Length: 387
Image (cartoon, rainbow, N blue to C red; front, top):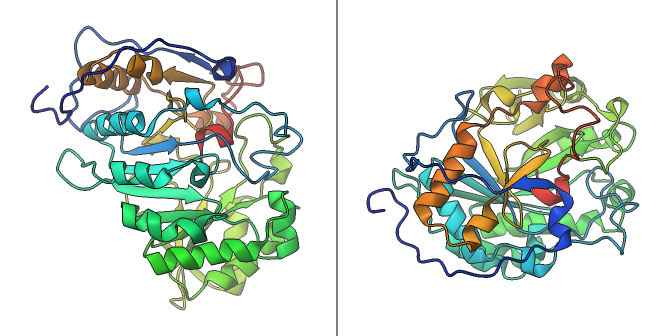
């Protein structure tokens, strides 16, 4: 193992118990190839896309019930979330993250559900902050949150090694925001969380607004006006067909082009180049120098061609696409005694075989041919895998 950046690990054999809740999405234990795939930082998939970004869901629970993610009609008090014993421990998450970093991951984003609901999340941040890329650089460590608990936790997260946060905020108008989160949570408390994150140095902060036509598109200009002349980067996300619980309809999607047109008419915009390959947001700046915004157009302008993201669910399933119908069960390998090299080889083989491009196929009408139409297995839900 010496020289591949993985270190040594002596796993403890444990009895494997699979709760019924784990079977909600199809998955299979990935094969360990006969010929090892030692990490080199140069891993690419079948379409030549490198592995650079890992999204880690630390909980499938959330204290909001946003209609586009966890509608209350589905996620009611009787909904069965994953049992505690199914979740990866912080040490298991860190071990997997270290293997992904050795394969070339440069950025790790903690997500949920709502990640700040995971007890002791600061300790996981501390563990992950010690990871390094193959060339010795610190991992870019970020977290996405609804900010309901951010005012209380911002400084502790920064002290533990978190670098940046992204806050989900779908309206400034309190009535609209309370209706969107559907738990009567006030927008003022989210804004306090953003302020606390700024004081703690968790920036540059990004604010994500999911735009749903007829629900909150009236908030586009107020949001733009509020975050102009600040260090916050506001991003508008097209309402996506993730999972099957949100009742997604195309007529509720407001194309990013229309979002830009509305803002440009009030505050003239200029396009900016991408910061790096695989970036999901198209960047724009205000012509008067008042800041930057972005749009994420996964419905109307697919960016599958350079997608470099993998997603790890809270109980250790690896998903290769936000719209995936099945995962790869890494937890069984973790708890079954696999060595670091065996784990890394299994991950490497999964990524090498990856050919996912759901949004491009949807845009060209090719979903049925790819087995991804409405008759396909259930797609993973947003709350379970994160954004």
